[in-house]
Each structure stands twice: as structure tokens, then as C-alpha cells.
Image (cartoon, rainbow, N blue to C red; front, side, top):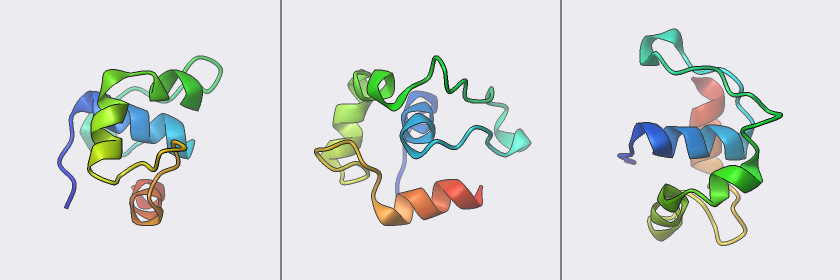
Length: 72
């Protein structure tokens, strides 16, 4: 199980390229032109996501995390 913050969700959203999340979360849509994976990986929470294995050292989402993000 992964517990994260709104910032963590944003990083995962940017890295996986998921532009919209379920409306119940109340998060804004991803703006691909601004919210790039490179920018997201510079956010401090990206290091935390790497430490728990949600992201690998190259900044790719774990396959299970990617699948979970795509299903939401």
C-alpha cells in the first residue's frame, strides 16, 4: 500500500502522464505543457517516492503504481 500527499499524487500524475484524476479527489487536471515529468522529479516528494519504490532511480513509476494511476 502507498500512502502519499497531494504533492505525491501530482508527481505520480506527471510521471505517468495521466492528465485527469477522478473528480472525487478534487485535484486539478495535469497541464502537460507545464507539469512535465522532469519538473515533477525535481519536487522534494519525488525522493520520498523513490525511497519507497514507487519510482525507480530513472524516475519511472513502478508498474503497479502506473496501473493504479491509469485505472483512476
